[in-house]
Image (cartoon, rainbow, N blue to C red; front, top):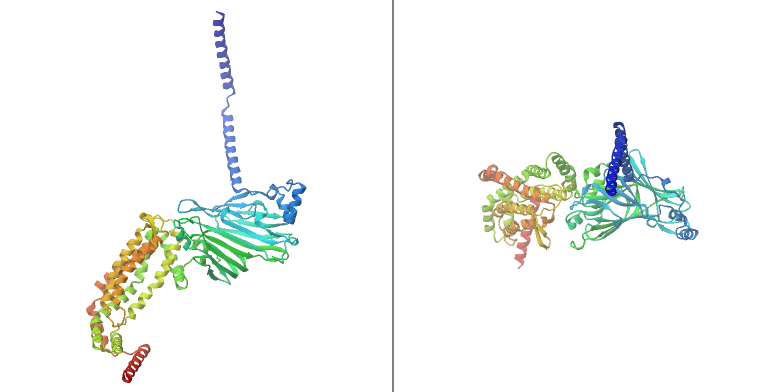
Length: 633
């Protein structure tokens, strides 16, 4: 009975305690004002954490963040002095580690290495590669940037083995990254990087302070910059074709190292040098031209199936000048897209690092095709812009096709007379040639009149051949089944690699090859019909028939690994050419009228040009010599 009573009392006690706790919780619950204050404090804490994260992202530090009170025992300090001399001080600082300083801008994610003081990582925020991986121009394993110098105590040191003290500060909107290799708190060698918002150009200065009695200015001081180009395109072989070291020297002269294989040059007066990796470039620009620069390029792609990481290895050895016992070299680094519009904004002639083509071909690209395509692509999809540009080019060159077809029509009309002349003078070839030239001259139907207009198309053809593979605007732009107009399209993967052709099938080269076949069948058929046969000369009719099949085959094989934008242009271009040819043949040129004009021209006295008179005299002299030789026999 007692136990039961005890249990009841325990239950009652538990209930009372629980009730008291509830009452206390109710009494102590926050008021509405207290709740508002708590919410406000919570928001302030969140904002403070965000601000702290932003500060950590840019890692804004000052030199004071690194005290010089690093503990080193006397034995270690003496060993460092024996090895590094005055620069032993830098190795005693807390910054003497393999750490990195991270800095963010609108366009970059950057890292600076304490050891060596150089840019150890450059990631472009706004671009990805063919596999959607962010573009890295620099990582620690593909770059070597250092200064080799002598000291007054007969040491030869290299900055890549020494430790720099980093600091990150603000100068207005610009971020300043200072990497100092210290001899003391007031004496140092400094790499100073200045980063601007939304800018691919990084200001870079190498300067010393108080080192006139430390650095030996009478010895060579060399800045060495070596970079292995990362692969960014689908085909490393295709990317490697447009990866090249380009430099400007002696004013505005542009030169390049070899496109294939290895190459090396010693060049004077270099004002900038570009490590171009097809669509992205690393460019060093100097305020004052370097005296003599040693440039090196090595091809790293021998087997596309094995060598898949790097394209080429570039290296430069740049001399630095000591003035007044100190270094003070002002330079800039450009890390960004190989885009003519962007490069042109720096007014340093950097756009010339892009292979537009030499001479008139480059001029056509820079003055016509780049502005025209830029205008069209500003309001049209890129594939449509290519088609519209193709139509405009073909309309502009339609008079060339007209001249060619008119010349072929005249030759076709004259063919019976030309054949009759050859038959009449079949035993006298020189006489046959004289009469042939005379007839063609009187009729105004010289074969050259058809060839010369055709030659006018060559600069346009080659300019476009250079334009499409280097047009940054086409990079990763889709059209129909094409994922990237700057690269080849794929409609089928092959289980094996065909030499010259590749391991895939592209559709646009096939379409372009078919269009070329029908166009050449039309034009070559006309030429074959008009071309008179000449004894002792190659059979031109047979050669032209071979060309009908050879040209499309060449397109099919060669362009399978080229930019699909280029194949799209040739496909549309040849379709339009076929249309223009049909219009000219059926609606513009009337062979009866052409024949009537030829007959009228024959009746008119034709004044011979100096060239024609000279040719006639030469042929007559040759015929006279032949007769004399026959007479002696």
